[in-house]
Image 1: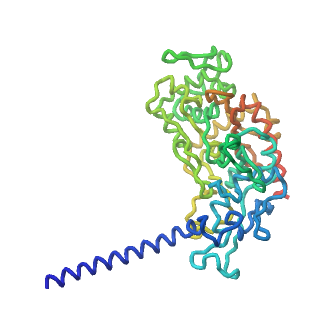
Image 2: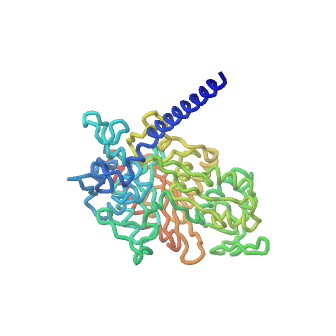
Image 3: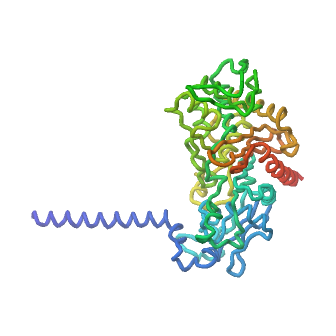
Length: 464
């Protein structure tokens, strides 16, 4: 009897292990089938990087950005357009992991885990993908960037449509380079989408975060006056300013980007509130842009001394920001403190979209600041444009903006411009960063001007 009982238990254990293994396999088959079919050793997807049977990729205007012809993957006819969209669309190599052709390869090839790649055409839902991106705006941004490295982001802060996302350096996906030991330095970082996957020292564009914190936590900040003699000593070390501003108001301090004033403002806000406000604006976390997470930005003053804290409020110290994140922050200011998350893909066949569970964009994000703070901050950004930049910098549109010149140690500083257009016709938030570009405004103004001019043409065409 005892022997029979022992044998029964062993049979039950083996049966349980079998069914557990079967359940695990089935679960992995459902969850991982798309990844398995994309493996390079799978002969069914061979040719053109596994895109030999892939559908078309369209921009928001119906322009074909990528297509397959006679088993060969082809791209837009215009060279600059192809280069400007390399990191959005991808190429045959699939080395750009965040690009559409890498992320949505199974949708493009019409793969289904029941039928595989052999699903009858009559049953396919369609293997084309429509994007929110505008090829003409991207081309204009790419042309204005020239050989400068960095990123340009423009999106509709009301709807979340990502209209422009350019990452430089780039290459022609129709004629990709052969990267060898001899030229690898020339192409270093070329597979990285700098608009969404890179972090940069923000410099003075971070003063928007400090300004929001001051408006929220310093009751009399708008009545205060600061004195700038070109530097201020904090804990025995100077915080230097690019100019001598003399007596300056809070609003003028942002407009003139006075480091001395913002060092003192940051100390008044304090480390705890600076950390809190920065994290509400997305620092130390990321955003999901149509299934692609942005790079995790960085702000940490939990162990900073007063000198380090002061520099952090100016956008230096260990601060790091992502271009897409900075555009989202500006979109939130335009929307009264609550962002609409950008999105790139208009149609997706992922299981999350089919179940209505996708959080890839076009949805409200967490509130970043109180509405009254956003309104006051937007007004100060508008004052900065009116008194310092001029609307001509932004294709004549009513912009609210902030430039930045971020010191990065060796070499020229990074140049930034971020902001939004205060307009019902052109609800656009933007961020431009040029690596080692030098002075922020002078470097970035031609880029944002050309990009917004193209956006005006596109949106006007939509309205007709």
